[in-house]
Image (cartoon, rainbow, N blue to C red):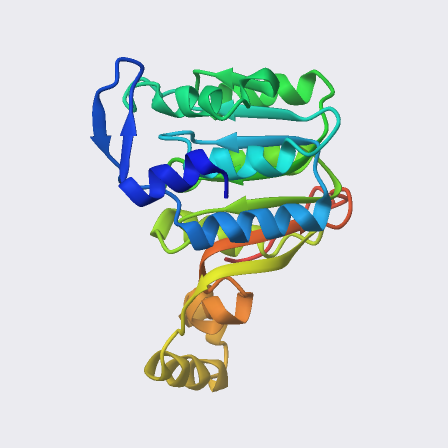
Length: 244
């Protein structure tokens, strides 16, 4: 952890360009920052994309690891940075990471298609943004196309209903596999018993939702933060489908 990040975490305060102080909130935890860096070690990235900057806590952790590379590139996307008083951008500058940061004050569904069209390939992505299912699913679709094979994408807030539904679907994609989880939770004995009973009934797929027949822990998504590795290019046929 850099001195800047350590100071922010210890004081629980951030400052804007004029020196006005604001209480730190909604930040990525220290343990999750460590998890992100651990996932980065797996794919040894030089080019990373992060959706959602806020006060820049996770961004500082990502850039700390990136800064060790010869030609690092960090692409940050956040249309609401002004809400955060541009403190995330300022913290990146304070950390000396602005020299390899490319910032987009725009929505990811506008930015990511342009990056894909440019021919860019990335090694790592971190998504901590909207909790709306279709919005975060678009992030997943574009980011997995931007990822090199062997690259990793990490989704935060996978306990939120919309993000969880996205994670259930993405976990079924044959070109991805789960390689890490942070903040794991137990489904619960009662729900496991209900699921076991439902699986025993004939034609259960016509009666019960997939998330009862295949619990979160069965899918490997019983965690707050989930890392997926791209193990192959997407070769699904036009008629591929999976319940989620």
